[in-house]
Amino acid sequence: SSITVGNGVTSIGNGAFANCSGAVSITLGNKVTNIGESAFAGCSGIKKITLGDSVTKIAPCSFWYCEDLREINLSPNMTTIEYSAFFNCSNLEKITIPDSITTIENYAFSECTALKEISLPLSITTIQSSAFENCGLESIIIPDSITNIGSGAFQNCTTLTTVTIPNSVTEIGNLAFDSCTGLTSITIPRNATIEYGAFDDVNSEFVMYVYTHSPAHIFANECGIKFHKILFCPHTKFS
Image (cartoon, one colour):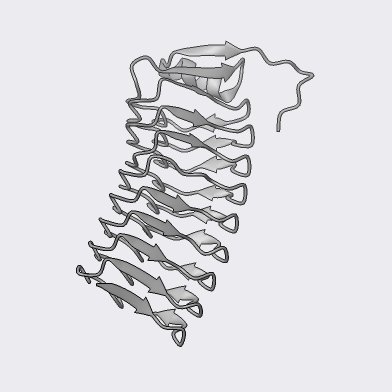
């Protein structure tokens, strides 16, 4: 069966359709602006969700444990993907993040084990703690609008093999890439500080590329992490 919300509805309340396990699709009318907390939580049979452009807010846990959800397109008028919005959507394979999004909150995509790739737009300024913890990501490019990678942001992403961190990043939180066992190398920006535990239990062949005398160089040396030094040319401008 499907859930269709008509054009006369502007808001979906907290837990409105929670645990409707028989529904396989959701279509929202073009006047819905707000989806309440846990509105569709536990709708384990839903495979596809179509959100209208009118949606400006998806509250925490809105699609929590929608385990069969495969695809969703977010509204271009949203600014935040809130806490645990798609937690344990374990079959989610595709999501399009519009360039209106600035913040991905804690646990937003945690346990999305089928999510192999995601494109993060330049509008994003914040990736909070555990946002992509235990995801199926194989590669990730952090946009150069980001300055901080939250604690545990990509923890236990065991299939993650390629990470691109821009020079804009100044802080990598604790456990950020902990237990990313597929990760064999990473280049750390010259000015980025790394909290302890950020790269615990990665691949045994893991090598960190660091700038000479940078915080990352000091961190790798203190923590016994294998590293290669990148010579810093003072005439090169780093952001």
